[in-house]
Length: 441
Image (cartoon, rainbow, N blue to C red):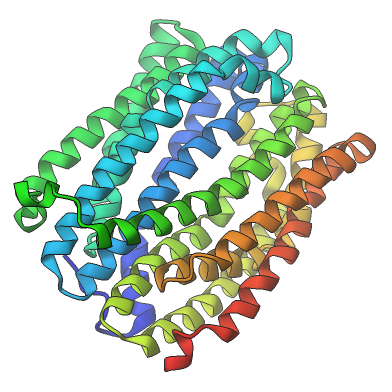
């Protein structure tokens, strides 16, 4: 366990964030390897089939993970206040509510899967592989949620290293199972999906066993199973706010995907590669935001308001430097990056993916500020403003999908995120200046 209410704010945040960053890199490395295996072993059509449903799987996973992360903020607040009883109560609520939401959402999506793929404009030639892949991913969402619950609980009590360990285990298993199922057993995209679910299930089980032995003070007792209204009254708004905040973002991407899927296989592959590369560059912002949510939660519980303000300011300044580094990378070696990810030699794929990266990277300071402020606000109890900001992004992307893509083609997709970023940062900055928490310092 680690107390984030003591020590220099930026140092504490970075030490907490480093394992998160390494974990995200491992996760992204698996994703890139998975993309490479599918693209090189099964061909661009199979990669396009998987890519055509990526926004859907991202939306479901991120929504559920957002809910769990929101629950984790409440656990961290009780931990910062040294309230062990309610820490265990909040952990119990996280398990029950997290699994309950996952089972419900998985069942609904499996029943409506043909209609969902139809709404995504998945073409007939991609339909069979796309439905096989996403069906397995949806059916296995409970395994993903169980791992995310473990990680959220551990991060809430200041342990960001153990989730990294089990994420590495999951990714190594995933890559090994990918090779086994796809290259040896020749099970196609279904094998790639099954490898992901199985690896996450094994990692979640091992993590739960470790937690029981390492942290006996957070092991649930019989009396913790009795619902505490006040705890659930805090869990649900914060969890749902984080879940909807993230799902608004992924719903916007889903809206764009419906337009992208009409632009042909090469564009789908180009966008899949460009988005994978974009995730590499944006990981530091996501990680710092995640770290700040726990940091602000613990400091809110300890009533350390000055530390909250200092942590936010220092983290924003740090992000500016990363934006400059990314610009240098994108404008020099982005063709090599795209080719490495997609295994494609099609010039149309490379040109469109590189164009996407160059335009978007100029505006990366906006997602940096957005990730930091949105998560910080969730951490110190502002659940409304991040939702407003994320809804603006959703609205902007939906409008662009239906107004600009038909006339501008893929360029409409390229400009969508910079436009959304500029608009959605406005309510965050306004709310930050008016925050009653920060006015207490």
